[in-house]
Image (spheres, rainbow, N blue to C red):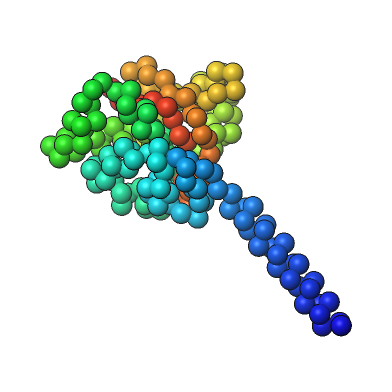
Length: 185
């Protein structure tokens, strides 16, 4: 009797421990697929139906290894719908092998070194009096602002992207899904 009680207690404790791990490993659904914090940016992005164009572009640009690396990176990930907003033929032109350098420039413009949560970005905006500027991996600038409760990213050309899904944590950084492709000068 005592052994079965100890076993039952151990089983309850193990169950609680496993559920706390699951809670700590909170996944976010993006493009119909779970994004696991234990996987890296590329391992998760390839499963999102909303990011097939971005994944194809990352592959064409030769950036898979980089974004699979240690990081940490903060990636502002445009959806397929964001790419569809670009002028007709833009994506096809960028994906051509002869435009690899230009594609790398555009994609690395969507990446900031470090792991920046939406909360940290919003705190920087508040501290900056309503705006915060960050330098991208590409070397350009992005500006962050709030409009109501929404977080916005503004590129060097004045294009504005709304963060539609924030804080998709990865093993090597964080992804913030955006609704517009950002363009450097």
